[in-house]
Amino acid sequence: MSAQNRILIKGGIVVNATGQEKADVYIEDNIIRQVGPNLDAPGGVKVINASGKLIMPGGIDTHTHCQMPFMGTQAIDDFFIGTKAALAGGTTMIIDFVIPQKGESLVKAYKQWREWADPKVCCDYGLHMAVTHWNDSVREEMKVVTGDDFGINSFKVFMAYKDVMMLDDHEIIECFKTARAVGGIGQVHAENGDVIVENQQKLLQRGITGPEGHPLSRPEEVEEEATQRACLIAAQTKCPLYIVHVMSKSAANVIMNKRKQDGTIIFGEPIAASLATDGSHYYHTCWKHAAAYVLSPPLREDKTTPNYLLELLARGDLDCTGTDNCTFSSAQKARGINDFTKIPNGVNGLEDRMSVIWEKGVQSGIMSPERFVDVTSTTAAKIFNLYPKKGLIAPGSDADVIVWDPERTRVISAKTHHHAVDFNIFEGMEVQGIADWVISRGRIVVEDGEVKVTKGAGKFCPTPPFSPYVYEKVRIAEEAREKLWVPVQRSEQDMYVDMSGPYPKTDEEENGAPQQKNSFSSRDDMRRDRENKPAIDSKPQIRVRNPPGGKSSIGFF
Image 1: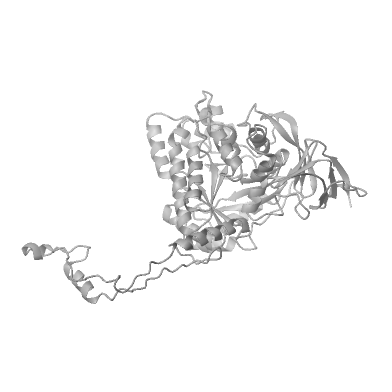
Image 2: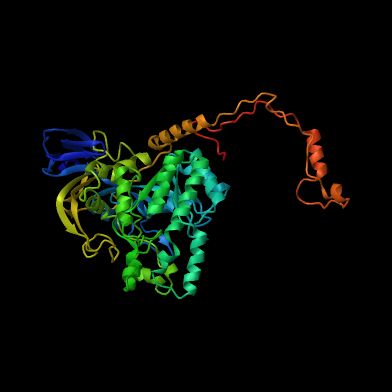
């Protein structure tokens, strides 16, 4: 057996979400075999000296769009470039999105994404499924793709991008009912798409065509309102909800408050961009610079937003982090040089997420190293039912491991990053905290900062339905709700109502005029109802249709 397949990391501090310990980590093939102090190195093993460094689970980026077709072009980071950049920064798994065209089969789109990804990925990956239209066929295919042959447990709906991907509320309701029935998780891009279209038209009519039109057309309340509406729909359908790319204080507050008020199961995902930069860039005089920051929802002009979101993330009011990595070159962005609505939406982040969050969170004192592991890896693994294979340094877990140097620094730049895009939204930011060594599937892919990847070495990781981490929360919430669903006991005397009236007089009874027919009940109808009305049941009951935490009928109640 080669040393490449047997690795001993010695002398470091193992950091999991639950704590730290000084321990060595022994890896054989693609599995962590031992974790403990003073492990002996068997013959032919590769030894990594981790003295003074931290040994942590590789990062999981919950939100990427590699080579995604969008707005008349395609994201320039394909699955090879995207996952290479991810590994360079310490992320060892991504979860990308299958996004069917309107009217396209979910299964067909899934197969296309697998064909794009499987030959190229350098690290492991999973998939979410976007639902961009609704009919009975989509409902049936949602059931299919949660099966073992496909392995998807999360379904994203768009409340924006009208006439392209946006669903109306009644369609979201049906989607969430189905997601709940199959043990899935509902995801939402939360912006009011109708309001955005109105704003865009008004801004263009006033001659505002540059990137500054993007945040002006999508103000913070547009995100806040849609987040509130998504939480309401999730609560009523009993569907666990995952809000992608939380970009504003007000949207974060909605998530936090809804959890506290009614126990709705909601997870909030800020992204590297919303945690480390702001919307002032949209007003830069250089069009190329301003356009590079265009993503949706937009970055917020309030410069205190990143720190606010970081504090919520650190204390658990937000849950885990992605990047919404969807990169377009300056030339691609220039499709909208005379019309901001045509600028392809998307920014980088895959390579820099881990260092940016360490710098802004841990290095600043807001976040502990344990919480860093939680928000960059462990919670994501739990939500999407990958834990404990992912997100944990322990015997039996996948050997996706990083050796992190908390003292080493670097300056982020498009000149040195591994993305294909020619701009970096974190340009010039100095970060302290770097992945010196990265191990993916038991193989060294970053060695003392040097990236050594193999195209196609990553594998697809199914995300099974009924995540215990999520559905245990659902069970507890439903048990609490059931305690409130108690019928009031009334005697036959309590139920008595004198049905002889009085009733409002009709026009005919009032002045002899003929009664005009309309869609409402007539006086005769009311009389017949009174004469034929059965006795009121003296013991009304409320029927609870869904067993707590288990599979349910697809009822909306």
